[in-house]
Image (cartoon, rainbow, N blue to C red):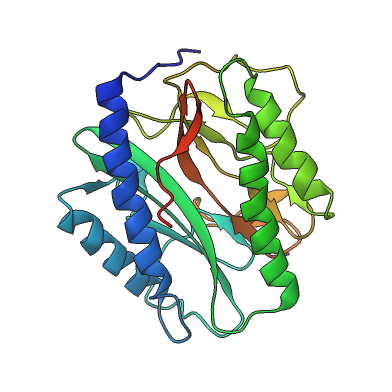
Length: 251
């Protein structure tokens, strides 16, 4: 495993990449409404990314055909946008995207409700989001990586949710996926020790039911094995001497 420590210049470039991506995801939330196709969301997202002079990280990555992964309801990640997939009232949709800015990547995901959603769906989205913040309490120098992982798992499992094990977060920088892997479960005290300059994409992926997953026939879309709803929340985070900085969160 080769974990890269970023310089101040690299962190500043990733900060810029993160701000752009956070802005794009905030704007895409406005597009997530009944009657809109997942193709439309991807089209708008790709246009926005390019308007900043950036390149979508995901388009063409290992053959993935779109700029934005758009995953609906029981789809966890890597949903392929389609003109045939129309969002309807009560759906939840996860948007996962990355941008390349001056050679450096940012990566983030959000799950949004479409129109009025059930209380159960809203709770899943909020618990998944909050578990990220529980995890990054340990994103500081001297902690071990799996302390983040364990905090995420413990929080989600306290609500009876399934924390996905087959998909993990990752390091990020000049490549969208770098070492180390960042699982959403693990034993405290394990994993590499965190140092200032490490950049991580931390991304809880949580099912309302089982943690088990399946992959659809397109060889991309990953779904919950029991067809239960799934939520996803991700940010690019850099470890600094005084604690973590979230690069992709625009308030």
